Amino acid sequence: MEAAESRESQAREYLEKHRILELLNYLTSSLLFFRPEQPREYLITLLERMRIAKLTGVAFPFFMDHSNIVAMFEMMDPSKRGTISFVQYKEALQTLGLCPAGEVLQDDGRTVSLDNFRDEVNKRTQEIFSSF
Image 1 (cartoon, rainbow, N blue to C red):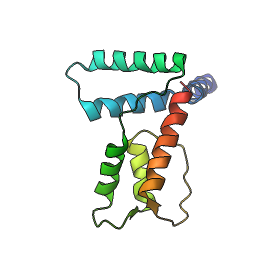
Image 2: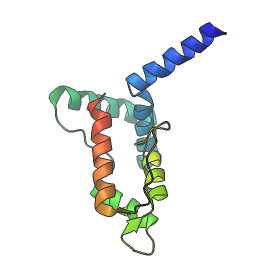
Image 3: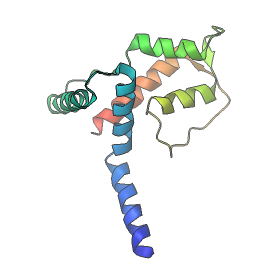
Image 4: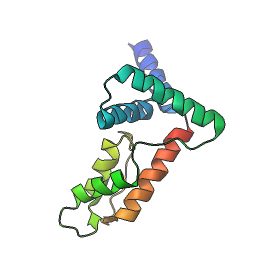
């Protein structure tokens, strides 16, 4: 029993160290966002583009551009208050694959503006891809 727990722990550590779950979340989100006719070929191309971006130091083009971030924010803010709740913010990051399941975000009762949301999405996206 102890050996099985050790193997499971090692597997979890490996996935966390190499940020595999974040990569898989991004790939899945991208598939669902674009819904390509040939998903396997799309994933191969996407991974190749990521590899080239990493080798050349060029920023990887993400599927969430400014207009997509604004659209997502506006869906969460239908009354056009200009802010969303912390719960909405956290759920959006999780939906985008930018908030690992084990990460604890501290809810300090604040609301999140579009600028803060956009900056956080961009920052987290850069962090994820710089680690691949």
